[in-house]
Image 1 (spheres, one colour):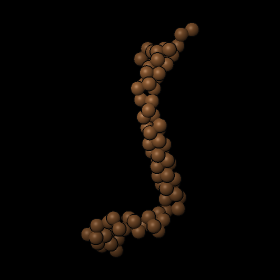
Image 2 (cartoon, rainbow, N blue to C red; image 1 turned 120 degrees about the horizontal axis):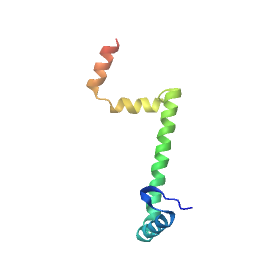
Image 3 (spheres, rainbow, N blue to C red; image 1 turned 30 degrees about the horizontal axis):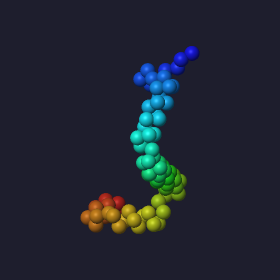
Image 4 (tube, rainbow, N blue to C red; image 1 turned 90 degrees about the vertical axis):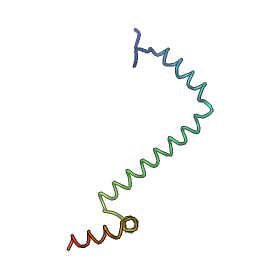
Length: 83
């Protein structure tokens, strides 16, 4: 029984393509995988922070950070509308 995957390629064709890619980009592969791992770690950290903010609300450090990045004119508008 012959299996065909995406684009009508069988398992042997895909193996040949992967081998060629490995030969072409083999030296850069550890560097690429390192960047990929850093991206995954950063994504997980952001998911964790977002989950904590939803459950516990923003931390005091996060509130100070957000206040520092807010324009003073925006703060004045927020304070006048909240009264």
